[in-house]
Length: 201
View (cartoon, rainbow, N blue to C red):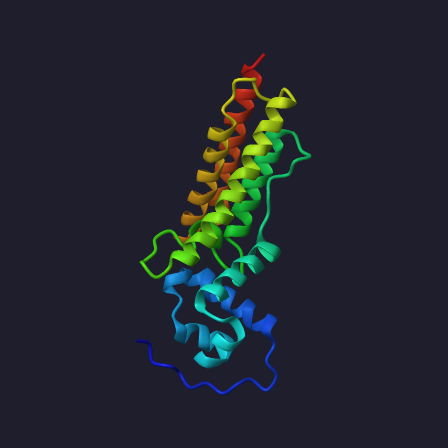
């Protein structure tokens, strides 16, 4: 069992600030890598105070993920032509994943492997990734309906391809890749999609 660190309660406890600080810990270390001591240090709360404010580590993580999506999340633009939309989506990922306050994507790589005690946190992340995948699939289905892609195009497969690129970019960003190293991925995806849309005629 982790030793509870004795930290005095802040003079004025701001739950929003504490949540944001916890988010940064999860973003940097992942769910399982974020220790109770690190969360206490970041928020200035003792373990009992953390649990009173946020119920559990899993609940704190759930709220941190929601905050991450609100402040840092982004989706593919449904108003742009398909090629431009995918290009802008991946280029933004290259910028966001390599800029402060955190590297990579919390949803993509914040919880890739879990122990037996992290099922709730894993379910939170899986739901977010599924929602992102559904959004990409819908965009490719729109592209088929708008005649940007051939009628027999595999919308689900294309969506998973873009999702895999995004997750790979997150891993590479965590490994230290910068924007200049990741941005060619967006360029390559644009080239491939442009060829696919041109070849349909």
